[in-house]
Amino acid sequence: MKKIIFIILIAFSIQLSAQEAPSINWLTIEEAQEAMKTEKKKIFIDLYTDWCGWCKKMDASTFKDPNVVQFMNQYYYAVKFNAEQKDSVNFNNFDFYNLNPEGKRGTHLFAYSLLDGQMSYPSYALLDEGMNRINVIAGYKETAPFASILLFFGTNQYQYYHNYVVKQIQQNAEQTTTNAPNK
Image 1: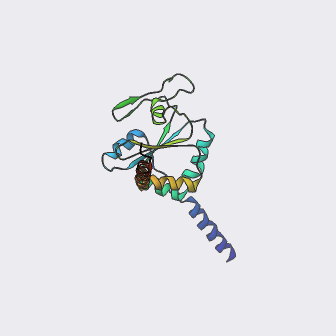
Image 2: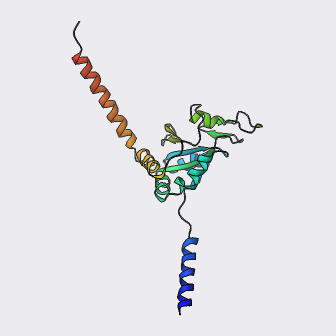
């Protein structure tokens, strides 16, 4: 009887481990543009290279976290883009290509454009529903801060923060003007 219970427990645990954990639905930039035609979402672009150790760590840890997976799939079209890939891409009716396609580590103009020439990996570009760049985030991120970033931009909190900052600047400018000595 003990052997039967033991075998059942082993079979049950094997079945549980065989179930696949949810994962980020990674797309190409072309697939994301096509998906935008049916449902508007923000686009998250993971700019990586094959040789980048921190990029691999993001893939192995942060991008596997259930909260990160949920927020990414809920608020974004997630795109993986090799910043040194040889193939050309078309984005917003503009062709981007690798500057040195025959070389070992040529920079792709799409990555260069998104990162304003600040080539650091991993980096993440966030685009709004109109495919305009909202922000660029550089470097490896732990799970909790990264999930917060996804929520901050995914739920449009960045817009409220921007409006708050602009209002504070305007109020400070008004106070400076009214408190300025008359000449």
